[in-house]
Length: 617
Ligand code: M6R
Image 1 (cartoon, rainbow, N blue to C red):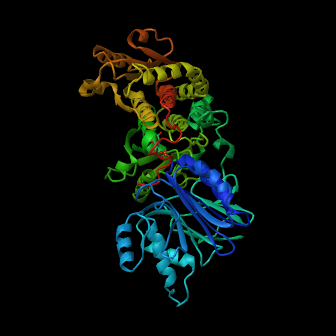
Image 2 (image 1 turned 45 degrees about the vertical axis):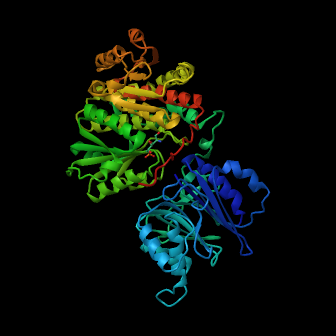
C-alpha cells in the first residue's frame, strides 16, 4: 500500500528519496511523486503514474538540488490512478506539500466547506483537503495573536479530520522543516548524526540509519537539520532490521526466494525455544502472562487474508492440544461484531506486517474491552507488536513479495509452539509436549525435502496452466479437511493473487453441498490428503470428484501408493504429526502458485491491484 519517505539533513535529498521509494515498491503502488526544496527557494515537484524504475533514466539528466524533501508511492483508494491524484498534494498557492498514507473519512464534507471558502482543488483525493486546511490555518493567527508555525497549523487541521493518517508536510514558508504526524498508520524516524529519514516502513530507512524513533498515534514531530522535536522526548532505539534480506540475490523473484526460505523460517521460529527433555517450549514474549494462561476459557484468533488461514489452523491446534475452546474471525468482520466475552477470554492477533488496519482496529477494540491481547507478528517494532499485552515474533525475516509465503509457515510454526506452551500450562502431558517438540525440531529438514521436489512441481504447474489445446485450466478447487482445510484456502488464495486464475478452497465435506455442480474435465481439484485422521474421508471426496470426470492433483504423504490410482498427479510430502502437516502441505501449494503464475507471465512479486500491507480499512 502507499509508502512515504522524507529527508532532512545536509546531503542531497533526491538520491535518498529515490532509493527509499524503490525499496518501498514491494508494497504495491500505481503512481509516485517527490517534492524537494532547494536553497534558492525553488521546488522540485514531480508526480507520475507508473513504475519508478521506468522513469529512473529521465531523472539522470536532471539537476535536482535540495536537502529537505519528501516522496510517496500511491496505491489508489480515493480518486483514480492519475498524475493529479499522485502525492504530494498542495494548497491553492502551491506553497504547502503533503504526502499521506491512510484515509480522511470526512474529506467530502471538509472539501465542500473549503470550496465554499474559495479554495481550489486540483485532485480527486481525500489527502488534498489536508493541504488546504493547513493553508487556511497558516493564514490565521494563533490564540496569542502570533503567526502560526507549520506544526501549529498541522495540529489545527488534524483536529478537524476523521480517519487515519501517517503524513509529512513541507511549507515554502519554513523550507528547512518537515512536520510528521500519525494516527493508526505507521511512521518511523531514522536518526543519523543530525540527519533524519522519516518513512512508513523500516525498509526505506535501513540503508541510511540504524537508530529509529517510532512516532506515536496523535503525535506530531518537527524535523529540521540537526534537530528532531517530539511531543514526548525519547531516545532513538536500535532498529532491528536486516537490510540485506531485502535483496533478491540469485533468485528471479522475491516470492521464489521467500518460498525457498521456508525451511529457514521454521528453523528461525523454533531456534532456542524447544526444551525437549521437559516437553516444553520457551516463549519469552509470553512470560509476562504465563500465570494467566491456565485460566483462559476461550480464545479468539483474529487476522486477515493468509494470516487468517494460519489462525484457522491454530484453532485446531489450541483445541486439540491446549484444550481451549477457540474461534476465529476475519478482522474486518470481527471489529464490527459484538462478541460474547468474559474475563477469561484472550484474543490472538496474527499479522505478518503488524500494521494491517483491520487487525489493529480489532486489537484496539479488544483492549478497550479489557480482553487479554496476544500478538503473533513478523515485523519487529510494528504497531501490533507494541500494542498487544504479550506476543510471539515469528522471526521469518523481511517478506517482500506481496504474496505471503514464508510468513505463513512462520505463523503456523509459532502457533504450534504456542499450543504446546499453553497446553503444558494446562493439561498437556509431558510426553505429548515432547512428541510435538521433537517433531518440530526435525521439521526444517522435512520442509527442505519438499523443496527438493520443486522441478516436479514446476512441471505439474506448467501442465495445468498451459496444457489442453494450449489453453490450460482457468478454474481450480482446493479441498482439505481439519488441519488442512485452511491450507486448501491458502492454496487457492495464493493461486488467485499470483496468477489471476479462479480458485476456491473448501472443506472436502462441503463439496457435495453444492460445489460438485461445477466439476468437469476442465475444473481440476487440488486435494490435500496427507495420511492423517481424516484421510479416508478425503478419499471419499476424491472419489466424488472422479465420478464426475474431475481431475485430481493430490498432496499426499510419502509412501502412499494407493493415491496414485486416484489422482492424475501426486506431490508427496514427508510424514509428520497431523498438527504439523499444514506446514509441509503449504510449501508445494506456494510453489504451485508461483510456477503457475510465472508460466502465465504474471508479475508475481507485485500482483495487479494488490498491496503488501493493507493499512486502510
Ligand atoms: O500483514 P498481514 O499478515 O496482516 O497481512 C494480511 C493479509 O493482507 C495478507 O496475508 C494477504 O492476504 C497476502 N497478500 C496473502 O498472500
